[in-house]
Image (cartoon, rainbow, N blue to C red; front, top):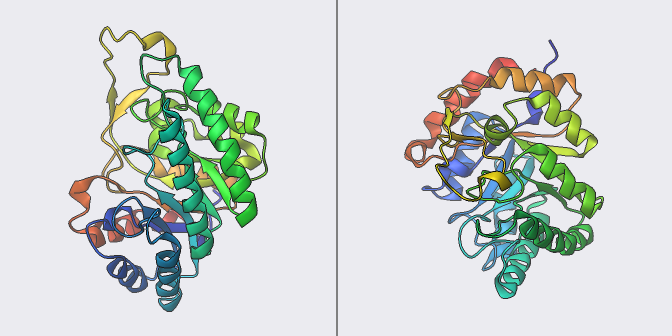
Length: 299
């Protein structure tokens, strides 16, 4: 069985959101972690405020702790008002401007990738309208990304967060339509389980050499009941999940996913993503658990 390399594993700062970034860095130093992903969706990085200056400070902290690589920057994109597919032109333009700031922050962090969410239309709109607006926004952002030599990695999402990019084939359609060397895709194992039935080999095949990042998350699933919702025929309903729980606290075959990535020769980072608030109070415990659970999956 092939294995990924240890230096491909990164720990995301998501579950350290209730603590300072300094505490996150110190914890990573103590655990011997050399690759991280920076979450910009709480107090650690105010992308549209002190963004670039703060990102430079953060890069210095990481270097001082011997942490050599920021695998990806994941800024807030799902909370109001951020939505690159928003119907309101002003809100959409502001969201594009915000993501352009995120690209500049990634450059200041020395980070090669920025996670990009596709945005959403209203559920009483045709999802194709949301897709059209996403493509327009992404087409603007790839030009900024090219200027800063940063790659954008498009993420699939639950339809609670996106009306039009839930499954890998929908993700690939947008990447194909934008057709720019700074736009690729990523796999989130929680979304994969919800919408692609956990078939990571198929997702790897669909994205091919455009697979540039992976979020490794665990979860538990249940069937989704949409009742009489009128939009049922227009979406990929998928299943519901408990969110990104602690690694080993869910039911996903994470070792199998990692083995499939290794078999495919995947060369980039795999970031641990833990997002449930109940895991934020004692983040070190869940970092330690993740490293213990995943230890034999890397060489």
